[in-house]
Length: 146
Image: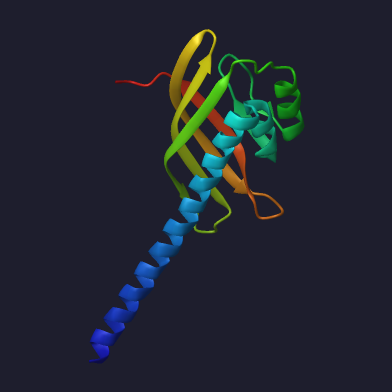
């Protein structure tokens, strides 16, 4: 009877830890979705500056890395957003055991007057001093294989 109790106790602990881990990961996915929602509703420049960690890095095509929130604000401050619709959806990700670092990846759609571009992205997230998720690294790759 003691052995059965110990087995049930261990299984209960394992499943409750997995539930907590899944809940934390879903919270991170929700932050990523809200980031996309802000880009759609208020423009990608506002979203990318609002969700940037102070030490954030953006990796963009044909460009050196843009490092730091101030540099990101400067980058997006010069871009027009007329008729630009940028959205994305996380597919998967994970969170470190510490709960302070995580990543999401998924697909994005960028609609402009020039057409529609689809691709994949990865965002690495870190909690800031307030305990809020902010991206620390963001990169995208245009094109989705069929």
